[in-house]
Length: 309
Length: 316
Image 1: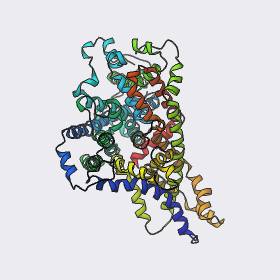
Image 2 (image 1 turned 30 degrees about the horizontal axis):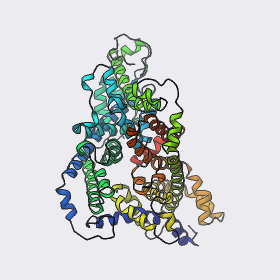
Image 3 (image 1 turned 180 degrees about the vertical axis):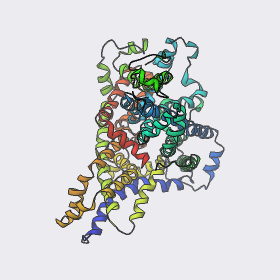
Image 4 (image 1 turned 60 degrees about the horizontal axis):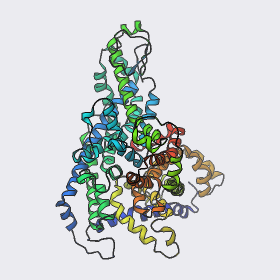
């Protein structure tokens, strides 16, 4: 460009606001977090003593934190698998599940309406989702529609005080998170499936392939790249779980702290227990876990790519 | 559509799949009667998931129309009429009106600044060569993988300390709209810059060159030529950021600790925690509906762009 004049002042003026805000509010906290995690800072006074890795040693011996970590692992392993299976299943039915009058593969009727409905939870605040499901699983005299429905269809034996049962808590969180994620992946995988040439399916149909075979041998391999990316993204999302747990189960992670997750544990240590040093150490643990999960998930699904010539 | 055992010779249009003339079907492999049954089963699953998705939300909306008596006695039933009082109780007594206003203020500031600063940064990074360009770019993009949680504790102190600065401190401390908005801007920068940089790179050089020939300054080239051309990208990203900011829960929890400054998602969370004691469930659901409406309207109007915008985040 022959606009040499005033180029650098312009670049500086345009970069300063975004970089400045980003550096102050996002980057500087991350840098400080590592240091704070090595202090005994309460956050209430200015006094902070450097204590090295003591917070990390304390984490190792903290049973409640171990519970939270275990729950996070359940979320990271189960939610993506469930979401992935349901997402692929529904996406393939919507996009290649139909057969038109000539026997050709098409989307099923009404697929765009399904996509609109399925996707909706994705645009909702997790707070709203958490509140609605708090009432879905509530006791019968406080909303409790799940118990009502079970009663109405004669399955009274399955009625439970869902949120008062320590063993159920994390699985309820798994269900709620899966519920809110599936639609997003249906739309994501649908976009990938739309780009698969129809004649591949027609050839498979003429060979007499069943739907299951078509699904396994054609659909899945051809959207595998998208699945891989979505899988990593999903695992990182599932690491969170903060808002869902905080709203449905409260700051202590529900009965006996059985539904605790790392995000909630961290928030509690900082803002309820006034132990900012320890909270920051939990934050660092979450960073390490997120990175490990991202790497493991990226490697775990690597597989021969199918190229469409 | 709920029938899962389809009679083998069923004809006509099976809901949920394209039906058709039986005679032709039978001659094609994989399209026979068995296929038809499978099709119906598939349709059944699709409908089932649709119901599982929609019913809890519909139930919440219907509950907001009921009286508390109706809600307790028959939570599954239809409301006998619309109890508008729920909405006025939610709006004033439960403070949802204040929270709504807070959300509108914060999101107006944060969305404007995010789009403006994001576009400025991305534009310079995409179209100007200068030392450190790559460094700044990766500084932004690197933020994509950092979990919010690690930043929470120090962020609280950064904001608190900014509050004690002379003169400007009064606008920048805890419980300030501007602080929360700036935090949103910072946390939106990685994806906004990443997405818009890619977008500005795709814009044709010829138009920019024509602008230069006409004697545009750097600034007016951006403002009058490039920014209007980037409109489609800006719109999907503005939708993405609007939803992210409007629905944000954990960041306001840290910054807005003062009751009157809570934003909507956060205020609803508190309301939900207290509802059991107050025995006013229907006002809570009315509050949910109030919070849900703006998002629902945006989603219905921009449905295609929202889906494309949100999924693009993963695919890019």
